[in-house]
Image 1 (cartoon, rainbow over the protein chains, first blue to last red):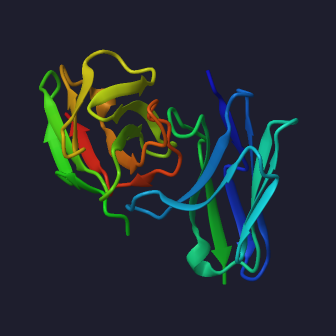
Image 2: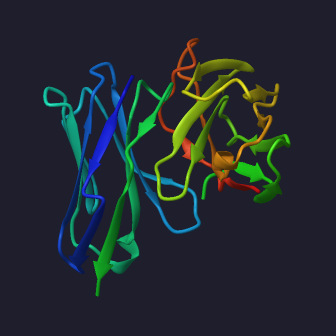
Length: 111
Length: 117
């Protein structure tokens, strides 16, 4: 089955700096890769997703890159703000039939 | 916020009891997935329902079972509760892309926090 690893487990950055979170997956059949943000006590919220036929996708300060050959994908947040502080989860799966989530990255943006 | 709702928000049970959790999917969505999120971990896939049929299952024992109703709302039932079942239970709804129920973007509900004593 699919296995998703995520690094780093914790990340602290200064406000305004960039943050990068990396994930690797094992199943070459996976073709959909969402990223979720979860604030303390709240539901995971989809922030960006990418499909296997696309190498990069951007949405304002957030971007995701996918390397299918190497089986890894990354989340890039630029110009970080204190409200970006949360736990971020990557996931990999076959169009939602069975998502496997990474263990999460706790991002702290320091003012 | 998504249109996905869950009830109850919190629940306390004792070991060996049974529990039923409920999820109402977002309008227009016919697929519901259930996840277990232990403290400090990522969500783990339990199973998915598409048009009232189970459409995939994760590595959870048979005492975890589910239902989906004609209005696409769903229930998660857990029998013979164990201490390790204490977790946040999340449902996520999506729209099935084809007859196989494969869909991508999933929107999560607020979760039910289950505590087993």
